[in-house]
Image (cartoon, rainbow, N blue to C red):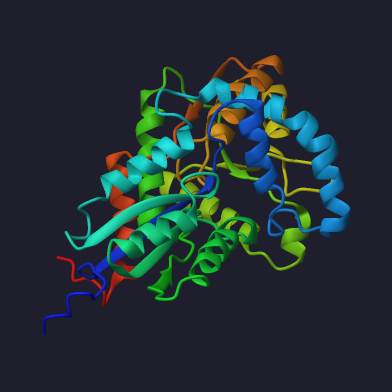
Length: 335
């Protein structure tokens, strides 16, 4: 049937996959970092305090002092491609471009900063995506990561007259393809080292202790990932949690304290991996690879290695295809 001449143009139907990661400032400068932190730390999923109590603290001392310090950290890892988090997530989307067939559009977005989730969802809908898989790239489920990414997508969908059908990627902390990919890359990276580690640390992003007490499964997911990876590697991993903030009690043991304790206990050669991060970012490349090394060596350690995340390497892309493909079942027929 031929539409009337004045009918709006409707693109051919497509399927969409939107990879979502945490976010990054647009530049490693205090002003850009302040905008980013203002958005990030105003999220009620991230800081679960009443706004009337939290916002004066945030807009006062935190956004006055922290941006300069954080900008320095970002400058340590910034590249010609920009923020490593954005560069690697973009590379993942590009690497999966043809993974699911010509009618599947793979795009990427940041929960905080650019490109925004709302902008990319609108662009995907305009490109004909009538069904979209939201894929927050957090292996372990947490309200402050997975939930808030989905929340932001639903917020954008609530403003659409013609919404696409939506699915969301479940956490994949114990997915066999994820564990296998981690084990493969850790083995390869350890084999390349000029030393044999006395200990291998698996560092996950920290969360306040109260998130566990409120029912968030994040801590349990991290522990299971660590156990399964230990079994796959045939070695015991030291589990720790990084990136503490504020005075509240956080999940432990803390990564920085753990590195110091290992050195003082005579474990002078250490490797560290970050299984909770889908790609490398300031928390891995600056906090672990730079400051973690400094803490370890100051405590007496002699050899230190940070093992990269899966990023957009072939092993990582195969893993992503393996966990995303089943979620497209019924929408796409894959060989």
